[in-house]
Image (cartoon, rainbow, N blue to C red; front, side, top):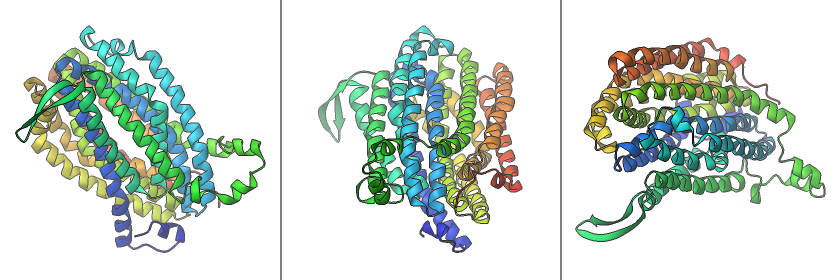
Amino acid sequence: MNIELISSGQPLTFRQRLSLTARLAWPAIIAQLSSILMQYIDAAMVGRLGADPSAAVGLVSTSLWLFWGVCSAATVGFSVQIAHRIGAADHNSAKRIFRQGITGSFIFGVIVGLIGLLIAKPLPHWLGGTEAVCGQASLYFAVFVAALPLLTLNYLGSGALRAAGNMIVAGGLNVMMCGLDVVFNLFLIFPTREVAIAGMEFTLPGAGLGVLGAALGTVAAEIVTAASILWYATTREKRIAFLGKYRDRPVEEEMKDRKIKKRSHWIPSGSVLHNAVRVAAPMTLEHAVICGAQIMITVIVAPLGVFAIAANSFAVTAEALCYMPGYGIADAATTLTGQSYGAGRKDLAKKFGWLTVGLGMIIMGVMGVALWVWSPDVMALLSPVKEIQDMGTSSLRIEAWAEPMFAAAIVGYGVMVGVGDTVIPAIMNFSSIWLVRVPLAAILAGTMGLNGVWLAMCIELSFRGAIFLWRLASGAWLKHGLKTKD
């Protein structure tokens, strides 16, 4: 099933819509699962070093999500516009927006990275970490934020490929990143050691860098992947490539002897920047506010002890196995509703919205059941410490009940982002977590410990899913999208 059917104006049957959704969703789901698998790998490898290194990683993990998420959200403003122009069959404009997005995204990544480096040393102390973990936590955080400029380009390149309907390449390269992460971590985290495989013993060299090695290994894998994604997007994806055989030849010839105009072609124009800010600013603010709430949850968990900090971090990583398929479907939803909206087919956008949300709720509901059943095995994989395993298992079994409604919130948000409606959905997201989850967690942690924190999460996610279903049904999101040009 070809995604160009959307821009062609041809009617699509339910079967065709389902086929197209599945074709886009499965590579995106695999990409998201590979991303969480990378976190599993890091968590499991660091977990073998003991409770303090695990706590050091867990202490700053939510702060890293803040910085990663802000950079990712900033690139969505460009990728949504690319999807709209492709939906309108205006590929030249899509290429121009992509080129300008590279400049804008890189500059934004540099600014955010510098901010991160400035706070890297005091951050673990602000979060209530002990002296035993603060030094390692600071170093781990600093390595990741230093790589943010290139990681931001990775987000943009992946988003541009998804906007063009190419989920396979973006997904495949992210799977490659997972494999590279394993290889780099094996050599960087642990010292040189004797390894036995199939009865054969050999010496495996290692740098023995511990927590620092985990950060360096993951960053190295991300950098290689970012370079690969950008190369493919700029030279091989014909709808957005502006280099090589797919470059925009008429524009290139027009600018041949006009160097000033050619340079300005990389600078975001007023209209492109305005639309990018309109889409991305609410998402960026929303992500910052939500991560601020997650950091507050970390502060609430910190007094419960090192085991609670580590168990909370590992449980969050384990639970991501359930919701990452939802984010993969949300990526597909953003592409499908974005191209439909750009093609002027609002009815089709609404049909894709309901289809993707329903699919997400079914898949994440099944994943929630699996999480409830296998949570002890997952926690045993992530940590050898019995106390951490028991606390994490109990927390996961509480939260597993919220997975279907969590899917409604995740995919519903992706549907609305596709048309450029981000202000109200962003307010819905951060209001829910700040007005429901944080107060409940603060109250319940005192009597129920870590279980109380996760019960608050379960209640809040169910509430958030309900309000996103309400907005999806209202159709208001279609009235607040970007104004597209014919």
